[in-house]
Length: 109
Image (cartoon, rainbow, N blue to C red; front, side, top):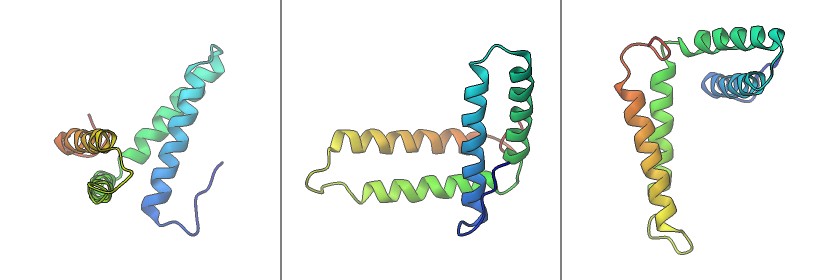
């Protein structure tokens, strides 16, 4: 079992746990053994359990806004590829809009 504790706050630990669970799910889905499929389903249930936290959606929206603001600050800086920067900002905007459009808790749909 992987534990995420000090020095991260609860929000960061939750995001790290979700990252770990999605990585594990991706590895398990590529396998053919029945036991691996069983653990893939268990992992899906764990993801849904973590995603059902009431504050997760608001935390993710805040993080996306923070990252967007950081990227916008790089506009006009020498050595920054404006095309790639704008693509990154667009991807963040798209993720923000899709997440914000979800009704209810994350994972409820």
